[in-house]
Image (cartoon, rainbow over all chains, first blue to last red; front, top):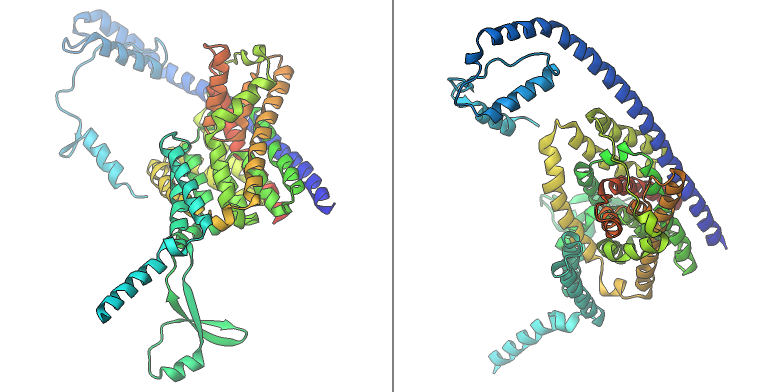
Length: 131
Length: 414
């Protein structure tokens, strides 16, 4: 009889506590999700405003440059797809139409630090970083 | 002639010490059981990563029982020992028993599986497995649709109903709690709870829990089909919203704090689960996150499997209790699935048909197998329906839910 009483207590307590804890988590997640998305959207807006203002003169200059020297826009050895990808990445970072890519050139020297190129340096940093 | 006698005596001595002469018949049956488990792991690939080490642990302990027996220590009163060994530099540890000081002199070293088992006995392995699971789990679908927690909670009802069933079958409350947790379909949680509440049942409960987890694709679909209509199974759910990195980083911290404060007995499991997840989501400790997901998880899985298998000796395993545990475990699993689907149906009605009840069955943990089953059963009705990501929400909620349920059982019964 005692065990049956304990069983009912366990059944009720278990169901109530598990549901209560998980429902509380639902409420908390909803609250912080809303707070985070609001905060992030206001930060994004501010960032976009900050970026758009100083970039405008660059656009004008770039457009002017593009009009003046249309022939020197690209290096012939760079495929069109790569130029499209670079232009899309620039658009994504600075905002659509904010700046114009007027020239894409291959770097003559490899970007390096000391005697290692960038990939080697990254690998070195990954393997020697302290815990 | 003397030489021949000595030769025969040594042959007889070796035979009388061999397993053929010393092992009881129960061990031979357990050896056959371990062969069946090896077959299921290797040929059928039923949870092989866990089932194979369990089977080998079971095989070894029944072939050579001393492999799971601890070392022996002789306790000698300090005065007596020093009197008999005057001038000797003694390095044995000193212990006080009833006001008398003794030297603890090691007589025999224990077996390998005895030492590995200490990680289970002291509750070390299951939380470490949870660390790895946390590092491998993407809680994004759950954060995106937090209502999934309801399904994760509903699927735990089977644990508490099975508790009553176990009491009715004559198990004591602690044993009943350990048996009920099989319904959580979470191996490490089942082992953790059993170690605390009824460590003598660890072998049968662990084998039952992992076997049923492996059998999820066979056990769940008939229950899912029985409790849902064709229209409900065909419901397509809207795409989940993307979750920001900040939300994913905050989630483990918040869950760890809230659950540990509300239910301290669940803090170890939830704490490790969420720590693993924070390592993953923060992105700043890639190296240790990868270690937790791979090397650490693999090592602990081997230790855990061997240790659990080593508890399944013939004397313990071949008892009527084991049959009861196997049957109750299956009942717990089926109840968990059924309640998950039933709550899925309720959510379907409440949301005006926006929730496919099939995702409710994934609330029983068994990540990611249970979510895959929801996807598979849903696609049988509508091949263009993709429920997998929606089912992952209740699935990972089930992991949190089963840890909370474990905390409740430990807090009331221990």
